[in-house]
Amino acid sequence: MSDYQIISIPKITDPRGNLAVIEKDVLPFATKRVYYLFDVPSDSRRGGHAHKEQMEFLIAVSGSFDVILDDGHHREVISLNKPDRGLLIPTGTWRELENFSSGAVCLVLSSGEFDEGDYLRSYNEFLRSKGAPSKP
Image: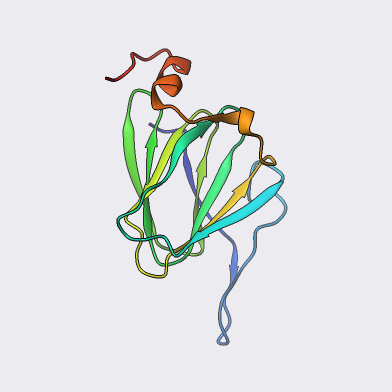
């Protein structure tokens, strides 16, 4: 599975604290929606869907969590734990988030506004869209 990207976010280092900046061509899309997950219990899972058109960029701005990516044929686990590195998830990729540390915050920048029609929320529907056999 190689369509995802880990992208380093440009940062300005200063003795007073670091500043990370996402502008210009850091991402391959214009951000149309920003949201974040917080106070997620460590035994909870988030995500559990894919997008037909939207791309998303996930950042662990605090703490850590794992992102399980699935392209219909392979699964891979990516651990996010640095606020100056993010995960670019391309369209048509199933994602699940788990193993949230205490105080974790997941910031998401999306290429589109919320559109329920863009979601694939059933894993078997996702597999069918990829031409892969359904799972029982």
